[in-house]
Image 1 (cartoon, rainbow over the protein chains, first blue to last red):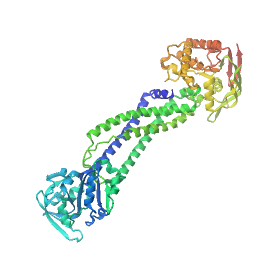
Image 2: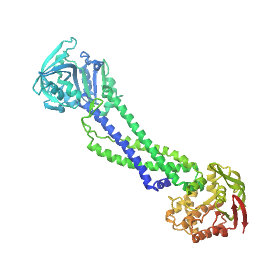
Image 3: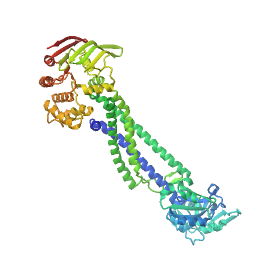
Image 4: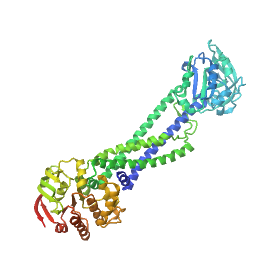
Length: 407
Length: 227
């Protein structure tokens, strides 16, 4: 009966209940949408960072990434690649040689990161071939071919077909090694560092230049299921982190990205906290207005034998019913809003965040948690907040209430 | 058999610095089956006395017994249970819970008492027949006239067969014809079922029809006339 009364009571002052419900449902919609957008943004950024070139995970010689020492090559690269090819979780992998060097054109000179790649394996793993804007992507047979980023081509004032000289320091001896290469293609990934500071040549040529035949610095690895790369406890990390090698996922390769994830989670809780505070204010105000309006009625109820606890319970139920109704509306509007934008996407392309450029549309991601945990937490929280006015209602003295109610 | 026993009840209210003595030592006994009107001018203390008798208010001094039980020392929760089981209330207006239908309003007290559904339904049907409102079960208070609402209030007050019905100005908001009909109905219930009624009123019609008329003046009993 109390629940029935609570349900009917919230429809007594339709305008007030509507305003309160609208405030709660709008808040919930905002919370769900912001969360969906953040989820989408994170996935987008991780994919942008990993799919363009980096890969979802990488194997290196321990300490190589600290100073990029040419001598720190992966131990037993053939054995590792043989093992990776048999791993059921792994989709693609590509070996790389990586060193610092100089590139010279007739018009300019620039320091850069020289990457030796296996063109075919790289094609499967990264988006380098898709990023070509001029000329062509590398082939295995391109002994002297080089591809560079669009910004670097501007700095060097070169076009496809022009000659370039690449200078590196050889392993062990430190001797300078120079090669004349021909610009085969220009790419544009939309990532500033890559577009102005990297050149790609075939891995065989890079190995010769550095005196590292049969050796590599990096193996980039992609999983069949992208989400596996988020799992820090996957046994595969330990399996390939031995004999002086280390295997890291993108989170460890980009600690700033992991920090951003923590910050995103914190901001979600902050938004939730602010929303819940607003809801608390709306609910307490609505319930107190409702109690004062019905003072005589509360007095009558107490007079005919309703105990203080049940008076309070009625008010808690009213807050629960109001929150539940608002939550249902909030879920429907969230489904609509997130549903639309998860199809059409939101354009943040060109924006850079924690060194990662957003290169694709962001699609808000709808999760079960958004439509279960958030609404349940909101209803429970609202009912807890309702306890304050409920205590007030429970303390109502019938004679006082009826006197106040008739004033 | 005494239903109510009020001994030297004093009730003072404080409004800021000012202390108002609403009752100044009232002694009153009500027997079972009485049809008593407590009359007096505004501010004489009749509503205060009725509230104290019904356990809605507590005396500053003195004792109040209802059905032999001292009620002025009971806790809020005990008083709620006591009122639910032993006292029926009829107020001047807005007696009914607006969101409940006639049937739900009448069965509300029985629901609080834990009476089973079948018994509740049976009693509601009987009592509605008695107050002449059969067929109005599903109507909301807002769909009833003032007189009909008071009849429902009477039905709710008597349905759980309390020891006493306390009615605070029950005819004040009714026209004389409707008020008279309501009073006739309560008098009939008093005579046929022995229901004890105590009214707080300054309605001459009630005073004339009451079997006992207690007049209050300045918080004290001025006269007590049995007819």
